[in-house]
Amino acid sequence: MSTTDRRSEEIWVSGTEEPEWAAHATDEGAQRMRPVETVERLKEQLGTGIVDDVLFDTDVPEDERMIINMGPQHPSTHGVLRLQVELEGEIVRRVKPIIGYLHTGMEKTAETLTYLQGPTNVTRMDYLAPLHNELCFSLATEALLGVEIPPRAQAIRVLMTELNRISSHLVALATGGMDLGALSMLLYGFRDREMILGFFEKTTGLRMNHNYIRPGGVAADLPDGWEDDVEEILEMMPRRLAEYDDLLRANPIWLRRTRDVGIVTAEECLAFSITGPTLRSAGVAHDLRKSAPYSGIEQYDFDVVVGERGDSYDRYRVKVHEIEQSLRIVRQVANAMPVGDYKTDDRKVTPPPRKRIDESMEALIHHFKIYTEGFKVPEGEVYVAIESPRGELGCYIVSDGGAKPLRMHTRAPSFANLQAVPIMLADSLVADTIAALASLDPVMGDVDR
Amino acid sequence: MSDEQTAPNEETADEAVEERALPASPVLAGLIEPFEDALWGLAAGQDVVTLPKSRLGEFGTAARQAGFEMCADVTAVDYLGKRPVRFEVVANLLSVAHGERVRVRCPVPADDPTVPSLVPVYPGANFFEREVFDMFGIVFEGHPDMTRILMPDDWEGHPLRKDYGVGAVPVQFKAANQVI
Image (cartoon, rainbow over all chains, first blue to last red; front, top):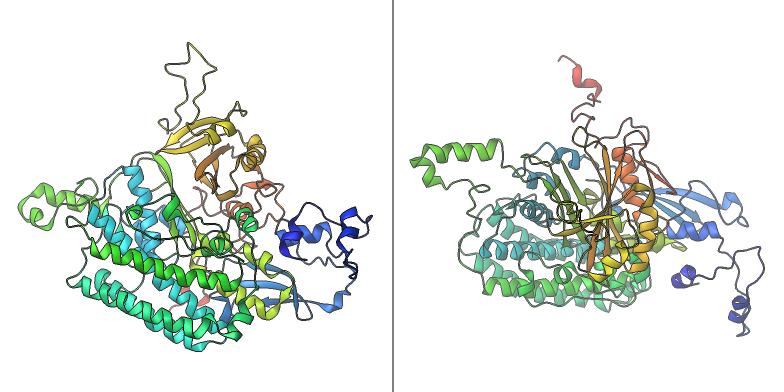
């Protein structure tokens, strides 16, 4: 039975009278389909009926079932993810992701930090795409403040986040390759990501956890000679992508490990709040950069990459093509980088420039106030969503008019995407667990926050 | 947050009570219309519907039929000492087909922290509702697995409540209080 059939309205519950269509379905002279799907079983597979330690296929003796924990310290679970897997021989019958091992209470912490300190906190959530987290938080704060961001700051934000998308997808490809035995992919991926991280370090001072995109703009202008660095990345990446394609695209082992493995259909993705490359690989052209553009990304030309089957291979291809599209955006941004300020000159948000502090006592007080008390944000609430490498990254901020948010909630894409695991893995092989999970690309920092 | 709920009370209350404020989008207006106790408004330009909590499940079903295929997010806010009704559950519904979003807010009193679950309509609300339960202690009725998701199972208290202190957990390492 394919995954789509399972979801259809017509369910033949074992032990009940055989419906008309079931007889029709076996007209080909083939053997009669075994009615294995009970209603509980279906709910289980849809994730709506998770009950622990209940065995559903009663015809299988209990001693042939095993509950195995993969993780939290398992090299291929990409962090501290624990999968409770129920096995029947080599076949996975049931999976329950158990999370929380990396929970550090960042949403609580955010309530004690000012809006200017906020990015230092959120940047640590999705550690492979820190700039996206910062951007999302900053956009939400700016929406409440109602400040205008100068064009150069917006272009820098797009440049940095798209480069970050490339570096994040490179890690996904690298670790995904490693999980299936393509160790060269791991080395290639991390080697090329290092180049982008090198550029980040030059610009922001740090390789990760940048605190670079802040409410009001960005922390610093691009460094001298940034054009050459970006040009180098733009020149190198297409060649490297060709290298990855040589390694993986038509590799028979890779194909057999990923083709038709971990399928999630479009309907399942929508029902289970799954976004990002996973949703697009199932054929839904939903990309927030197109449907709800932010930071002026609508001025640049790029395509939304979609897959067809929604399997692990499609997700791998979607990521490769998204790197290409991000390179396209980066090239356009680099060619048309506007001149001007890299942060807003709204004195409510941005402290006075260094020169003014030397001249004016008021400017010094102003500077001191912004960095100690922070700026006050008008009362209100806002939800801003951007397209992170893993899907819809949302930031919900409720302000009570003070300098610290009353509530800061992050809608983490990996957290929602993990709900795909029980669907993808029901009745698959143990080895496919690894392939499917790697293609889902969860980041535990994002899941647990 | 009076500016968000542009309820038609100031000017229009005398003339026509039946003229409710409805969004310009036909999809959203058609969804909200049958719910006479739903209050629509704009918050920072975004559509927000305030709804009595008892009707959340019903609204979810109607929203799914109206084309909001995805429940993008469920969260909650604790307004301790700021509002008469302490909690507010906030659900974000997304329509990929129509490219629209609506935020549903349901006030939840502290003495009865229960809300109908959205999981029967939107299975993807599962993890989000567990997180809200874990962090705020709000119980979603009809949820198939109302357990803690991020905190340990034996944890006491709900960390994101405002009366839960930030540094209230004693240090758990045995050697922490040792004098060297």
